[in-house]
Length: 211
Image 1: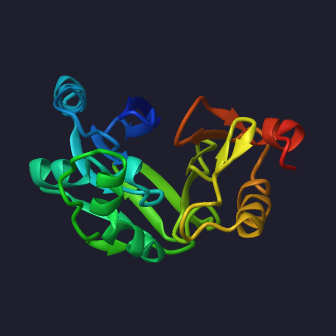
Image 2 (image 1 turned 180 degrees about the horizontal axis):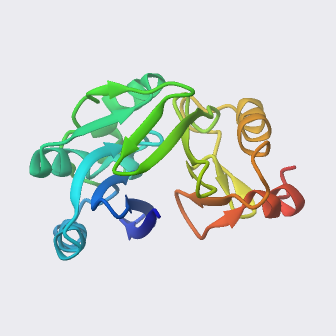
Image 3 (image 1 turned 45 degrees about the vertical axis):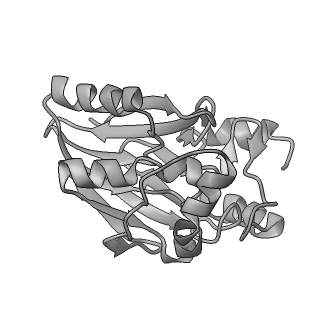
């Protein structure tokens, strides 16, 4: 059984997800931590639950989702992975940080790039990669078929969708991604977004004003 711990980090109120199962292996999705107290909160949770961090994953590479990559890769000697189409965003991360008034450690280049259909495994858990561009060119969703949840980054929110006015964003591409890759999932699938509260596929199909 996969447990999902949500941390809300940085001024953008970004959701950082720590996933672990009975093996005590864990991964972190979208490390938005950038302050010492945020690093400590994450480290303390990992230590107190006797977890072994195996991997850092980015659903996309906007600045609020990658701030903690360098810290975690260095401290825990783990790899980070993302979709190659978001490399331009990662390469401009320091400029974006300065534009928003942040100082960050330069995020490392991903050790591996993921593509549509790839599987990410840790412990007894498998997440399937879905490429869902539109919010950013390399946005991905991570779907757990066995336990019926999907982590979608900033592609879909409760009652909303991701911004498409940022570099690499495209409204029509985003709508197609949601319709083709997310709304084809079972209605009971729980959706964990990069900001705000969770929702379900059925709820968004029936109430989201963009559809």
